[in-house]
Length: 344
Image (cartoon, rainbow, N blue to C red):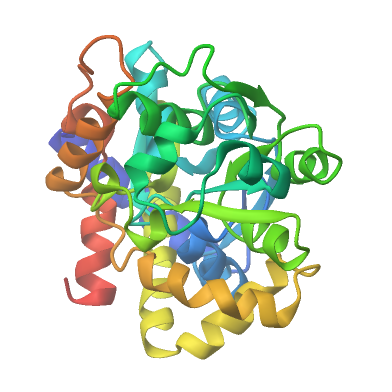
């Protein structure tokens, strides 16, 4: 998305006004839709707990709305100012007319894991050390929980099957259950045979001996998802135009958080534990380093990032995506923040 000269001048003036307000201690409330705690929002969490949003004069108001499709609906409908969410459902919504744009990248890898119960492992014969193609081939006759139809958890499950020539319809029962906590509870009570989520839920399932992680994208075992970026900060295009100062402040806070994480990894790890108060410290430390390593090191979403993402999205799309990079990505503020804070 390329913006005209008059708009840029107005944006610069707005940023100066707001910077003065921030120095005067007037925090700007920003409502953020989220699906519950998940480490694939890593830089956003560091920016929050590390005080980098506060430094920019922003007051983050978290609203847990459930899965990615609900986050997208909240932003598109105006009940949230932004969402931390997978780019895939946002692009899909944009394809269908929603005024959504991405302003900053959060995670460089699809941080999703498939967990199966002990009974489902026995039924399917799936073993964690099998090749990915064999595991997907055996994934049949089980009920798998996802956050919502059309959410990242749903699409990624379908993509594993469809990439290997298998039709999800009738092969597995896909059960939308809302937020991760509800999904985990259903798994505990045997209502579903497995689920697709990111940390800490898969690790909790293993720690409680409820089942095993059988597919882990973070470990790079899914070829079609290698190098495909995942989460970003999503806003309405109209909101960015009306509040360029907030978009700029968010990207600066993210860049500060990324720099802090690189320079102080142990402190970043400690900060993020606050989002997982019920997760055992030892369990948390088994998965946090891998997520930290996959967190974005720059808020800039590159054209190559976008191309790789669309290639993966095409696996489950009925027709080609027409939303271009310039349509979906507002890169001005992320590039400015990367240059000013990260020297990139």
